[in-house]
Image (cartoon, rainbow, N blue to C red; front, side, top):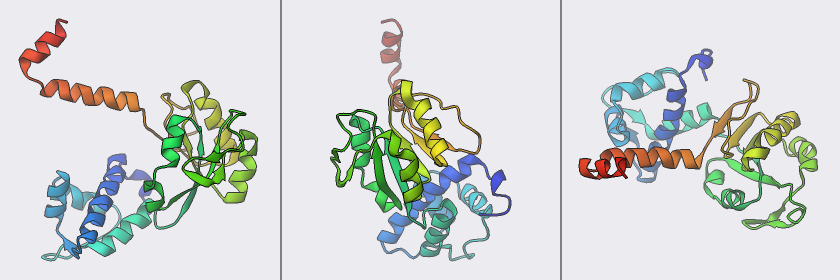
Amino acid sequence: MTKNDQHIPAPTIRRLSLYLRQLEMLWMEEKKTVSSKDLGKALRLTDSQIRKDLAYFGQFGQPGIGYDVGELISTIRHILGTDQTWNILLVGAGNLGAALSAYRGFAKKGFQLVAVFDSDPKKIGTPVPANRELKIQPLTDLNQTVRERDIRLAINAVPADAAQDVADRLVAAGIRGIFNFAPVNLDLAAEVPVSSVDLAVQLEQLSFQVRLSAPVDDRDQADHA
């Protein structure tokens, strides 16, 4: 990152992940270069927006040639910190936690699930269904495991009423970033970033967009139902 990385807008950081995904697709298609115009067209963004975003991190591309796909992939991975492997842990071995532990996309992006925790005595010591090499651990093992496995990132997939307590314990154990799936806002220190995914809220937003795109007659009937 640059010396002014604290002033980079959050939307720019989010778009870097979109750029990386598109560039990786181009690389798989054996395309060596891409213009900001073509990259923007694929992502429904303007070429000026792409150039502005990348300018926060340096000068990229050559006039008349575009960006070197492989070089830009390496650069964005370095900026995002995914040019290294991150050990991560998961708290919550319920249905959502089981689905997350089975997700293969984490490893492809450099995130290695190395520990799973739960508070249910019946689950403690049993193998993680998606990874039989891991056994579900009690939260009392949290501090030691974080220290021994050098874990700085955690996934919080517990019910809402337990989410804050679990988050506090994660931070106390040394976790420095939390991916929160619990449907609640976590109250943590500003230096501990939290990325939250509320599936119900996302569905509400999706239904709103679908409703807006529905014929006027259908919307009127719904309003008067």
